Length: 337
Image 1: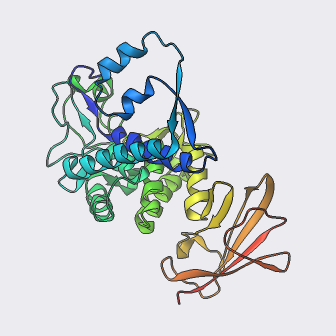
Image 2 (image 1 turned 180 degrees about the vertical axis):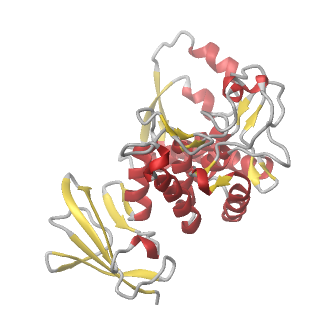
């Protein structure tokens, strides 16, 4: 809603990562040519302005052209690299990433304020360097974390109505999009922290929010609300995308169930407190079948100190790159070699 000079810097991370993902998927295609709409070639050249592109596609013709797969991959990777470099060099300020420019074209944050969205999208898109991820995890916790309310605020308190930032900053602080403990963004932020192996930070972010929802004074039924108020009360249980992200966090990052082009690789990031009597289990669909994966940690090793020593299913030992499963899986953890 700051359409004159405003900019959502946070989502530039997502766009850059999307280019990388497209390139990686195109590499798996069997053909040596790729059919694309003619107008997309303009974007690949990185010389077109947005207004020019929109003018061009205002009357969409649907004409297609063929591009060499190798050239398309190279262009996408080049465009992604340029954007990621720009973000790392120009958008990382005071140990955190910028999030928004207001309608005057000015960074909405300064030395005293920050926004969770920029940090979330940088981690989730894996466009931050490892050093930047570590630094922003520290600064974000210092500025935005309130354990007694459920965890991470969506932004700092600006102590004013920011009309040049849109309707969100007209709400009272800690309500809705103005600084509430906004579950959707918090769970995505936790997911991003796990991607960088910042497990202690990620677990604290996710489970502080989940435990808040379980408290009686949050006035929640089962589930996660859209946000928590300044009193820690949950609001709008039916308006949250965080539920699916919480399941994805548990499945993909915490229990390490990772698929790539049909191949399953297990890479758990279970903390010591995630195990009950040395075991942690999840029941989920794998290759279209309901299966249970149980991790065994008899030596009670913390994350970072264990490795997978063996994987067993139906008394047979399996390799950690599976293309099919017939039954439940027992995964045994041992000390790093």
